[in-house]
Length: 89
Image 1 (cartoon, rainbow, N blue to C red):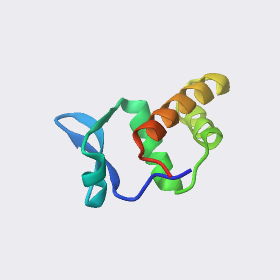
Image 2: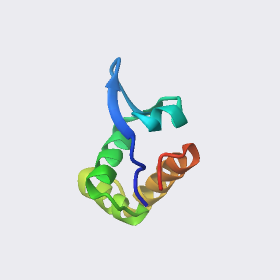
Image 3: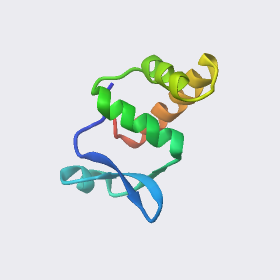
Image 4: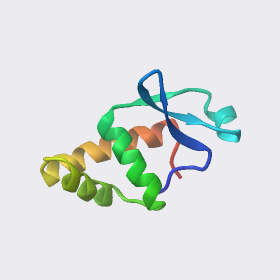
């Protein structure tokens, strides 16, 4: 998986939000607010280019005090939400 071109993470009024830029803004037309952990995962996914749920879960375990099972569950839920709103390829 990878994040579609035209989607960026920005801070807006103290909140971390995914928004479309350029053509992405025309198709998306909304903001998706992320908590601190989801924003951290978004940045890791952007840095990686291509990513997997397992790869992000492993990175999450390295950054936060979370079990591998809980990390995978949480990452899978976040990635599913990103897929649902159409920001992933």
